Image (cartoon, rainbow, N blue to C red; front, top):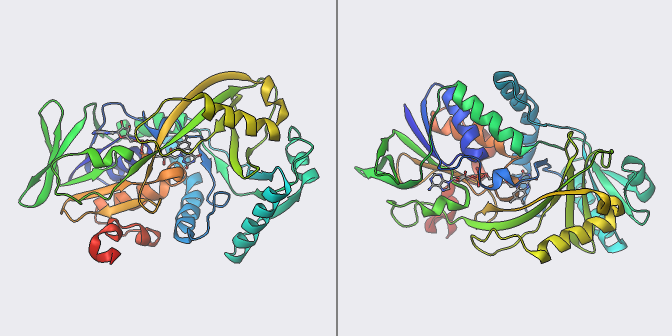
Length: 375
Ligand code: FAD
């Protein structure tokens, strides 16, 4: 079985690894592997803290992926000898004022209704866990099973795993899907060459709609949602675990790494394919972070970047076969692509290899956007 995967972000890379491990010959096409959202992301693994009303299927998918993470990174690290910065020290979510605290209380009740334990914390308990928090912090929630991974370590490890398993990496832009006898038969590259395939997976993040050669409507619409992040550095201990905050209704988070890096994010902006870093975006992040952690102004500034999250019309992933036989999509992971990497790779590789597909995949089929299903 010859498989071509377009896009080497976390989703394409992890799926290539698992599909090659399943015995297929895999070619991965990307002019700049791991250069998209996967290189910008903070890497929080938090199906619970980011819970939103009406997103229960996504919650189940996120929980399945979080529970799979430990084994996934253990296998990856053992195969490649590379570390991924995986941590399971929980995530604390704190409230700045009483309105923010009311919002966290609502969230906790919603989680409890779904059978997910959430530990409510007083302001003092928050500061006991994270001594650098401002004295005014009103209270919070602890999600003890959440954690983080460093996407800038995860993607090199995935690339190395692909290499170990004989995945062919072609550093070119895919221009079109080659269609023969009403089925996908390969991928045409920007240098004019064609790679033939039995199946093609389109996993090009927010660029997934740019691939030519396809009948209109084959690929569900995916839009870019910009996020700006700041990377800071500290030599002295500053944060013990990932910390999310609500500050007068706006959301900010800080994710510490073992090497002293702290990722502060992230804005959410609908501005098309715009990756400019703006003074206003950075100001908002620093303003809110300083309210929660006044000592942040002492940290060393390291980097600012902006990335584009791939968002589908309902902001949930789109994974599975399209109306064109032989063409599958794996995109739309929006704010959760790093969290959802293990389960997405399991789902997409099972689909590519005709294996048993995990049940949690059900609600994320591409045909939910087709006119007949929507009607
Ligand atoms: P991408 O990583 O964008 O990869 C797409 C790849 O496709 C790129 O390498 C690109 O070069 C390639 N490509 C594009 N066009 C073509 C073409 N024509 N031919 C070949 N290749 C092509 N998720 C979490 O779970 N936790 C977080 O804490 C988190 N924080 C985030 C913070 C920010 C600021 C942002 C922007 C995102 C964050 N995310 C987070 C979301 C996560 O980063 C994304 O959901 C995930 O990276 C999407 O991965 P992907 O592989 O689909 O896309």
